[in-house]
Structure formats: C-alpha cells, structure tokens
Length: 186
Image (tube, rainbow, N blue to C red; front, side):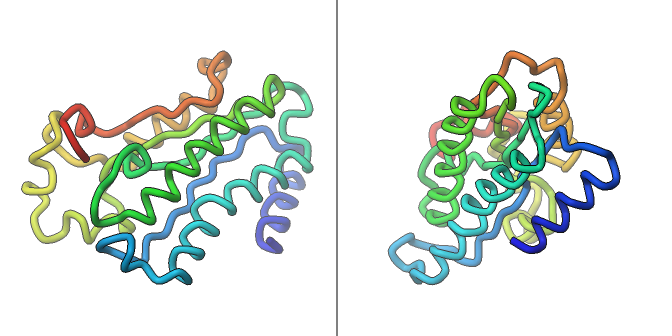
C-alpha cells in the first residue's frame, strides 16, 4: 500500500491531478486442478489480482479521480474469468471476481467515474510465455484471427475505454481475444 500511495502522490504532483487508472496486475503461480492449489497461493492470487485493484481504485478516488465527473478506470481481467479452464482455475476465479468488481464499481462510482475491464486471451508477454513458448503455431491454432495477441491489441482497447469515445460505457468487460471464445470452451 505504501507503493500505491507513493505512485498516486507522484502522479498528482507531476500532472496536477489524476484522471485515469489502469489496474494491470496479475499473477498465476499455480497450474493444474484448482483443488491442488495451496490455500496460501490462492490467497496471494486473490490479493494481487482482485484486492489490489480495489485498493488502487479507492486510493485514486481519495486523490481526486472523478472529482470533475470525468474519471475512468480500466481493469485488466482475462478470458479465464469468463469460463472454466481446467488448469488455471484459481487465476480464472480471481479474474471472474475482478469482472464482478468492475460491474459493481461501474455502478457505484457512476456518473463521476467510469469503470470497465478488458478480458484478453493469450497475449505474447513474459507473463504468458509458458503458454506459447514451446509451439506458438499450436497455441495460435484455436484463434480465428490466426495469431496470439500482442500488447498493442490490448493497449488499443484500454485506450478506447479510457477515452471520451467511451463516455457512455461503464461496468462492462470488453473481450479482446482474437475470437478464441467464439469456439466452445476456452
């Protein structure tokens, strides 16, 4: 929390105010059946993937986000939060909770602050590298768009949701997944 306080204070000191917040935090230290996830790992996943976003949002509001009626928050969720995966269960549970938090905050903070989320599928980042490093072509095969995501795909969606072009959107989750969820199952 001290880091959050320092980062928000630095943003306000640098820019004079706080208008936008992107909660882009996620961990997944486990792989396999959810019942095999140690409870300490489950707690850490929930703390990092859900409660940290709530904390950042609370602190941003306290620092004036939305004071002028035009604040925006985007939470980075995951398609794993939209359905069962069988192998990254606790991560999916945490991202489903983040999607629910997005809806609730979207309702409670309106109209001063819009709160939305993006739900990416596999994006070529260091975080997801284990999911595609051995065979990227195989990993991309289920995607109708014929490839995995790249960070710019998600950045564009986040930028849209933060912009005035999304002024009448709140509490929503934009799926950015190359079409992979169009198939049955994740």
